[in-house]
Length: 290
Image (cartoon, rainbow, N blue to C red; front, top):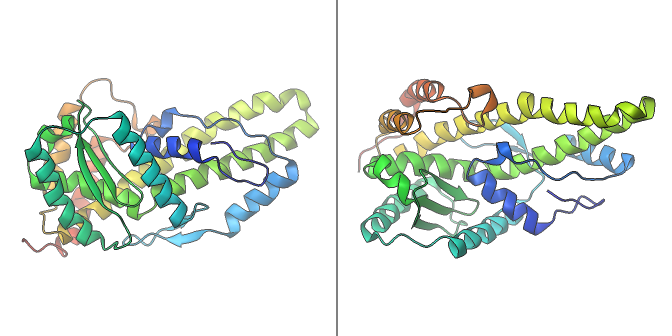
């Protein structure tokens, strides 16, 4: 993500990053290096710590967001339009109707009247789905046989909508800004003492920050989306216990060549299923079959 000395964000780059976050591929993407002054980095890092505090609904977790809600929604709209321009809609009218049907109920449970909801099935074999800020939802054709029914769609949609409600995309962008600013500060400090070590330190910082902070934080967000997603689908009248069987199916689909959990943005299938079973009693208190 590019940024000026005044910490203004380049809209095009953020839109690209936002799509990447929604598709859970940000772990493999490194933001471009930014050049900021020592004073600028210091003020930005201090601003990150002292401002932008919010609380995630349902879980009560505190978070820091430097991207405004309005800006995030606009970025979501722009990113969604970009996806629709590049990817044709599915010709399966039954799948489109099914996604709309489940989406209407999930959107009511989400209680976000300011969202401009959209639900579309896209052509493609990808076993994936996303919800961008502002309620822009898309499922690829490849995931539809895996979800199998309305309950399965509710599992996936609840999870993806939870990412938007918890403002995970904005939080990740804010985290990237803070990590970059801190890295600049530390590199400047090392360079002032041992100039020949500054470049090696910057590489070391990037690697260790990714493994010890960025990736674990990504897994925590995924788990939080699972947690909130169970509640959303239950409030919408879908049985949250369907999440266990869905993720068991997903585990079989994704067999072979799995990334170790500590190097992944997502918890392992075993961890995910175990956590869901722990959260089910809470989710069931919201469940009323419709």
